[in-house]
Image 1 (cartoon, one colour):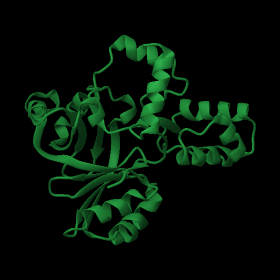
Image 2 (spheres, helix red, strand yellow; image 1 turned 135 degrees about the vertical axis):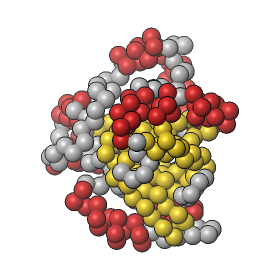
Image 3 (cartoon, one colour; image 1 turned 180 degrees about the vertical axis):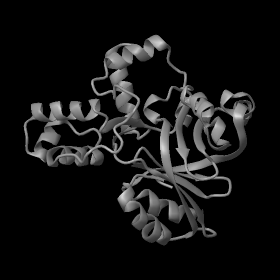
Image 4 (spheres, helix red, strand yellow; image 1 turned 90 degrees about the vertical axis):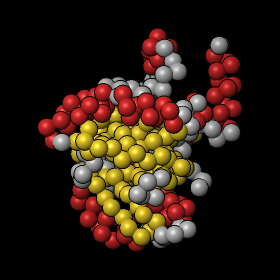
Length: 288
């Protein structure tokens, strides 16, 4: 497929909203939030939470909770957010929060298996703004005022041009280009193509909460971190030590994963929820 055809097809996906471009700023390690909604209020609570800037992703799910998501706030703000703000979300009956201790897998390294290794390498070589290492810059110092303005503008419009960013920050296009490249290379921001995995033939998203004895935590985490098919995986406080998000084609595929994946060898118990609808992915809000 030639470059012109790829550009035309890409523009069509963007214009139809199938794919959106988002820029994620990387700050403190976040916290997992579980919400039990009042009867008939699941959508209302999801819309309210998804609109909050600190919410990175949010799903409406089956299982004991109705909403599951991640909030990204520094430790010194966590008490106020948990005690005062999250408890006041309209339509909620109960809210539980679990600080995230580590990130085993991030969406930026997800591989749904559609491209060969050679194709992925070729695309990576042409990607000027690929985050070049797995460990993101969590708990990094605050951005300086100019970088913060650039980040805020990109958060509003992930497809903003360097001219647009230079105008917003009051600097030249070349200065913005250098600063954006540095922000990406140091893991402070990351570009995301945001879409529903169903467009890749993976219509079923499941969230697995794994209960793991501390003596087995290292081996389970290694098995999770080494599987590029896993889109997102976290180590948490609470009884479920590891949370895993996977995208599969059918319920049979999910059953096979639960029965045969190496990470299950030392798992004591698993609580599996299916995502009914996503209200937010990679800081990009969706209609619910």
